[in-house]
Length: 108
Image (cartoon, rainbow, N blue to C red; front, side, top):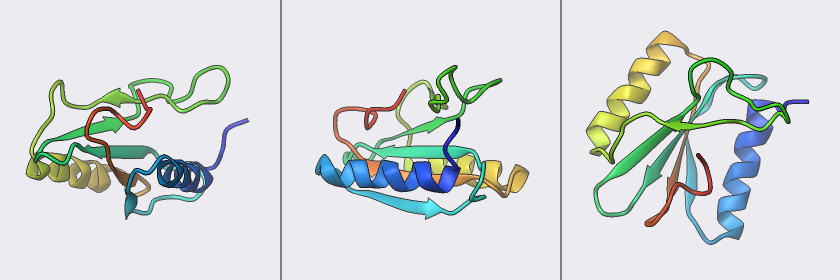
């Protein structure tokens, strides 16, 4: 059984809070099944963007899968442009930002 996007995003933000990381909702999408994009702010001016992989976005156990959209960390302008482009194509997407200096917030 897959979690609704709204519940999954809420749980992700709560988990970040418990781990001492700051997370915030950038864009609210469809409650039921909107695609989730996660911006990782490395706090040095660089960002990674994680999104659903091509094909299935969940594994056999119903866990969400993510892949890096860019091969290396990018500037905010590039990440923001990509999110806006995706939102223009699919208005149901969610976007979350998490501050994590050294990793990908446990995703990917």
